[in-house]
Length: 232
Image (cartoon, rainbow, N blue to C red; front, top):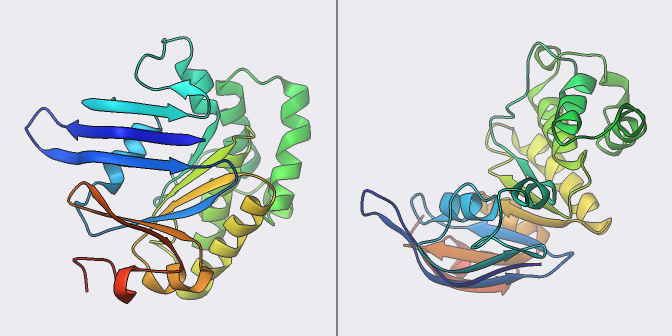
């Protein structure tokens, strides 16, 4: 479970990115996080991944308190969260298999578990036959699926996808979202940050709308009034 309680975030330059947000995401939920540019969505991601700490308020992430977590516990907390980036961030000189193995070794997973887990995850995302390819040999949609596999490979309880369809055409975007829904149905909590209205409306999931650092709407079904508040 993820819980933000009276969270505020002010950067060193005086920018108030988050202003008193209260938000709870239960285990197994699928949530879209939407809002105009500069609304605070990126700051929320950084708070959830432990990259930054809130100025005010409390954050609980999958049983860990982000406010008073020890250095030793930070890697354990981060293992519960898999992050999917818009720009993929794959290592071009490594094969698909080695990109995933690298992430597993980084958290201390042994060779036996790596050998067992990677084929399962690649099959889940439909890329088992591409394990020996390099990222440059794959299409954009395939690279994004590798990024999803990398986020899943350490078996996190939560996946956070930051504008995951930003570099994909509409067909690939829909394919990707269907894959995230499939992953969610297997029990993983999924949080998708996006500005793509059509995708949000199509899936009828919970939508949390952020604007100027505030939650302005939290409902199921689509955008506020058919659009993101403050954005055409």
